[in-house]
Length: 582
Ligand code: COA
Image 1 (cartoon, rainbow, N blue to C red):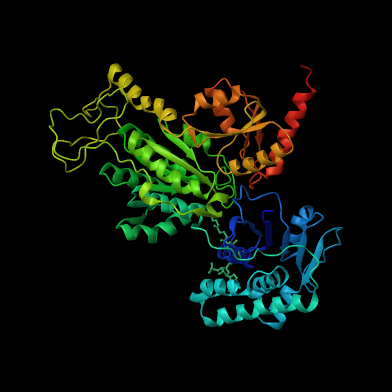
Image 2 (tube, rainbow, N blue to C red; image 1 turned 90 degrees about the horizontal axis):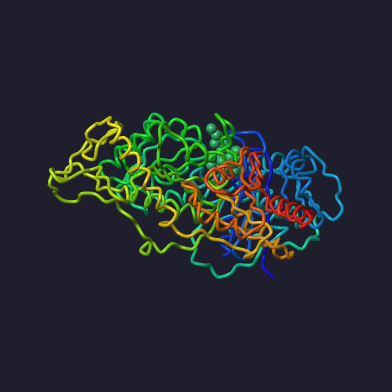
């Protein structure tokens, strides 16, 4: 049977919850396991509820799952929040005695106390090491290799000095010794033994975006930092130097998008990454990129909105602004990544589409995906298709060259500064084929149609959408972004129960892939669209562009769906359909 073990560590921001989860994740990847992580923390630097969850398997993991097998609770709040998930068969490792809570006995739940606060404060005189006392106890109880935890401690705290490394080693040992001396193991969970390492690389979502951009040929990254997009730039600032590119921190988001457009105008592939509030500021310049037909990639790592909202929390609520944002008719493409691997490949796809169609392309990710760690198959960089724009590469006849030639595809050859004969004005003003400003009805009509014609071919020219499940399903689920990973898990479970279910996993959300959505809807009785926003934004886009009227399942609590919530909704729909007389 496949290994499927989920460990949740929960406590207060500032107690080292996130580091603890990272150390366990590193131990699992060193053991050759597949991992998927989920982290959730407040936007404060210290205080508030923080959680780090790790799901480990020897097989491909579909989603972060519904709950945990083992909960390590650093304080009473962490215990109270997670108490509903302490179901029979689960294990609680808790801070006590001398902590701030005492759990009640729950039938079927194995409980191990570890005086984490007491040992770190009173015995080791180092309260910050509480998390390592906890990790030592986890190693003692479940067999996480101490060597691996020590290697992570050494790597993480090297810059803080040997003294910090040493007191953390002591804390690990103290937690380990405590459980060995005070507890007899009565639960069935053990950390999986090491297996031969697979040819994988372990990345966070934002790291994969940075890597994808460099592989796509990006050499310039102007940015104004914003949670949860900031770490794209942190990774890229080191990576891009290796390919003679550079990161430029601008004074605000407007300057960042303007710089990306400027660089792209001269032929340098560039992009910027932001989150909802930054997208709002950038919308004016989207129009310039669309009007001047300049390739542009913007990564939107969505967070809870509106306004400053919940900067560190999950939401999928920027679909409307990315699809419709901008004054006037702004053609653009919106893609959405579901997992870390797609953060890499769809970043490349975003560049390819921007280059090919010379329009703005958004890639949507989100706060949870930005931090999610996954082991992905090592990409074969040489085999990845890279598209470069249609541009004048050598001297052209200035009398013949028409930058905005009204071609059947809407795509016209770009001029490149410095290439003789290809000089042109890239302007936000409406213009004729030769780039001269014009206001005639004919020009406005023709050039608007030229710009929008590009979108006609997107569905045919991008990869067919993956469909899985039964050919004649009772319920067909259409989802996007991270929610797709929960849908995958729900579909497996529902089909195991004998339900007829199918799912469609679009990556291009705008322009809406009308033909494939219509065909999918025709093959199922009811279409369900689960998404993490209150309006049902993708469901609304589908309604407005197709004849399909989906059932919405919306959620806006700042945390992603659980697979079981989608499973329950599908069963509700199947039962409702069954109750309707034929
Ligand atoms: N010994 C020494 N140092 C330790 C330690 C140990 N045993 N355990 C943890 N630490 C350090 C960590 O190294 C980290 O310091 P660093 O940032 O210098 O590396 C720090 O303590 C916090 O630990 P960490 O495990 O990373 O996080 P946490 O679980 O304590 O939670 C956060 C803290 C993540 C909630 C908080 O730091 C944060 O980032 N909040 C979000 C801020 C934000 O983005 N706001 C939005 C603005 S719009």
